[in-house]
Image 1 (tube, each protein chain N blue to C red):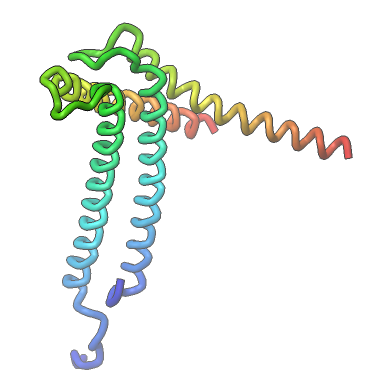
Image 2 (cartoon, chains in turn purple, cyan; image 1 turned 90 degrees about the vertical axis):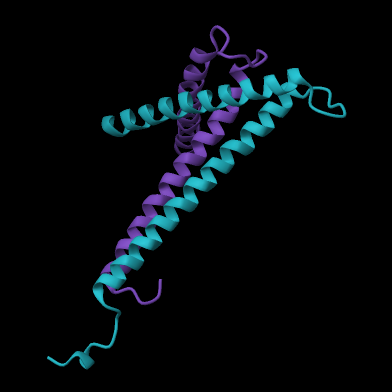
Length: 86
Length: 95
């Protein structure tokens, strides 16, 4: 990063922040793909997916995200209850 | 306007070229890391699925299984990536 003027340094910083957030996004995809593969792909691999495996994968991604959202909601409700009862 | 008043930084075009070099290097490293992660994961999953009882060498049926498994893992990854991306975009638009 030496010998860059201020504007260029800022531009590179913005670029790196964007790439870092993209990398976090990609890491989530790798993680969910691994989880959903284990849950949905149970047949011996052949030249195409077995019946239901593709739709299972699609549903798996949706339900995984729903699960995260649901847990956040449960925890925030519990916090509200604790706050109002004390 | 004497040139010796502006000794640094380096000329603009040179700096622009170095900036582009940094950007393309970073992109290249990230693409490589992504491909490695994908291959590592596929290796783990397919070893578990196809090589259930390791013998002195990979059998023909194990190799066939591994080839199919790699194809299916890449396909599964594509499905997950597409579904996840469209969901995230949808929720971003909604909020």
